[in-house]
Image (tube, rainbow, N blue to C red):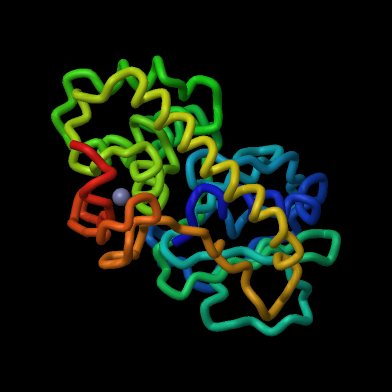
Length: 270
Ligand SMILES: [Zn+2]
């Protein structure tokens, strides 16, 4: 599943081919994605793309008249192709540019989304989002304050988009391991020092993934290949039964926040 670093990398990969150019048209081959593709997109013509940005796991294409908002769902990806390149059956949407390039969206499972908004401040999916993890407003003070009185497991807390955006299941698992925190630890029991460590490790892991993603930027120009999701160096995720890299105890797993959680019963404390 594309996580925040993949979306950031996709944005960086396609920006040189979109920013400053005009959209000639948008071809929607399959409007039935997670939500119906906004009908406004098919009407866009001769609109300049002024910038690209990202909010949580949403890609935002700024035009002179509004915003095209993309989400890659479970299996979506974008790449830059030309009109000669054959269309795959999972290529659901093309943004055709006046420079001969096409941003092509592929999504076998169709859980992604392509929407239009005239005003980002009022865009319904952004209203309840917490801060970006790499911004200064996501800090120890903030996380500690948010954690008070919360009786939920810390893993649910970290994956709650109203607390902080973009911490997916894998990053939650890995950062909890690095911090020595059991995924079921009650959030309200976090100390300020533990909040500081969580913030530090979340930022560190996301930055590391974005930097690694930088090496895949050329993949956005391969018409047949798709930019892969990053192969991450994982310490704990998916390693049930393997020895803990710290102490050698067998890694255990359980379901927390509806998703598999892996932890070392010795290193990670409730
Ligand atoms: Zn251990």
